Length: 319
Image (tube, rainbow, N blue to C red; front, top):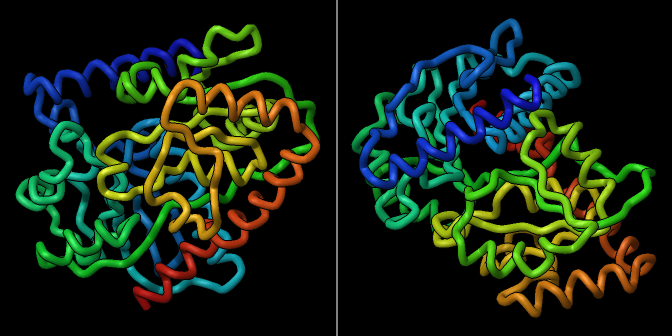
């Protein structure tokens, strides 16, 4: 995919998301299962892992998780699970997956329900065409909601696999993500205080984990935001795991559940513009100390939140 195509796809998806919120489009709009575009298959002789998802963030997760499944097969052999279908996210692929021997829903988005996140799962329950056997949940709050609707659940946060520290020169401040994809207030608090710096860079065109990992490793500090719906449900998004795994300092919009999910204290959170500036300036003023601190965080995240570990957990649950 070239840069122009990536930017066009990002803009198209953003416009459609706005139209979904305004009620002009159904989440079904334009959805068709297309292998290699929104359906990805990872195959062993007696197991087919088929994952439905779309969008750059989803693809980062899917590719890393699929590669971890391939590693599992190479190391331990075929788990012989039949066809395992995983619907992901909160848009068309989540609502209209193909059917397998085992059907899962990995819930990490509220789709067009940002203004009413509490309604998302009930709406999904009404509209999904293949009822999942298990809902994979990013938080205990998500588990409680899914269980109330009659689903079996598995606590299954996101993670990382392709992200790691690299020995490259770091400089400047960066944010990776589609423009206009997060709430305006979040941008005011997290991005706006530093976006006028000469060394600030905003990117949205990367489609492979290796590309994004390299970019993170070139930055002294990056910024992170969480959509309101994710925060409401206590979901920690993939950016947190991926950035920290790369040992890159991350100034994150305040998240009530991030420390519980990570398993360690995370002081680089911000609730206002002044805190954002203070964190960025502190990182840059204490480069050696901060880099050592984030290398330790990287080790913890890669050990405790790897997709290798997640695949082990899933295979054990399904066997």
